[in-house]
Each structure stands twice: as structure tokens, then as C-alpha cells.
Image (cartoon, rainbow, N blue to C red; front, side, top):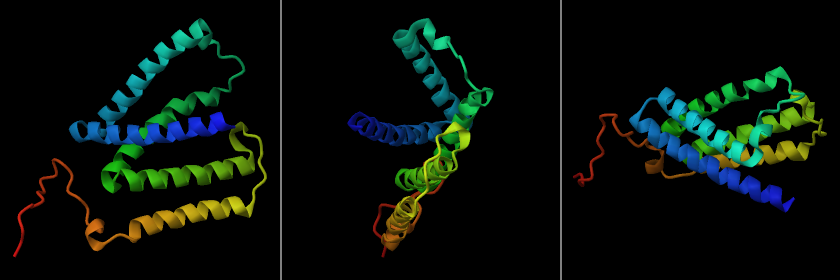
Length: 167
């Protein structure tokens, strides 16, 4: 169990880091170019590591449902949506919403036993936990000063922020 927790923590850190990198790439290219670069480089890295770790067994795809193949297309939606959300909301706020949405939908799919998952009994404690996280996001976003609520100008937007004092 400790290994699973550690791997989950690492994955969370990597998702946040990847989201920041993707947003920076997107500042210099378009969303579709960013998505192509991210998923293309991910494909190349996965292929090389898979061949090193598993060899030709990597291509043995027995007993796999055809609809599982759509995972890559879902990844396109993930990258596009995250890049745009980070550009609009900033990394922390976007990731907070993504993680809450992910937790809420995982709760739904587990509870219903959808998509081939083992059905996990629903409890109101689980729902309450998700609602507490949503409340935390609201406190995080709405609880700042009025200066924090003003959107920062994006690079290339043509809007310049003055660093000179005003009278």
C-alpha cells in the first residue's frame, strides 16, 4: 500500500509539472501543436521504455476490449483541456478543479461499477470528502485579496502591466 501511495504522490507531482510545461509550450505554439508534441514525445518515450522493459511482449494484447483503444483519444482531450484551462485559470486553480473532477467521476464510476471496474459501495463519507475538496477550492479562489482576483495579462496578449508607480 505504501508503494501505491508513493507512486500516486509522484504521479500528482508529475501531472502538475507536465501541466506547467505544456502551458509554457502553448505560449509559443498553438494548442494542437502542444498536444501533438506532448503526446508524440510521450509515445516515443513509452515505446523506447516499453521495448527496454518488456521487449516484444509489449505487443501482446490478448483479451483486450476494443473500446480500450480509445484511451489515446481521451488523452488528446485531457491535454487540450488542461493547456487551455491553465492558460485561462492558472496552474493551481486548474489542477485543483481537474483533481476534484477526477475524484468525483472516479467515485461515480467505482460506485456504479462502470467501464469494467469492480463495484465499490457508495458512502456519503466519500461524497462528503469530495464536497470538502470543492469547498477548499472555493476558499482558495474566492478567499484571496482583490488584487489576486485580477487576471494577469498573458504573454503576447498585447496588454502590458506597468511597473511604474501611479499617482
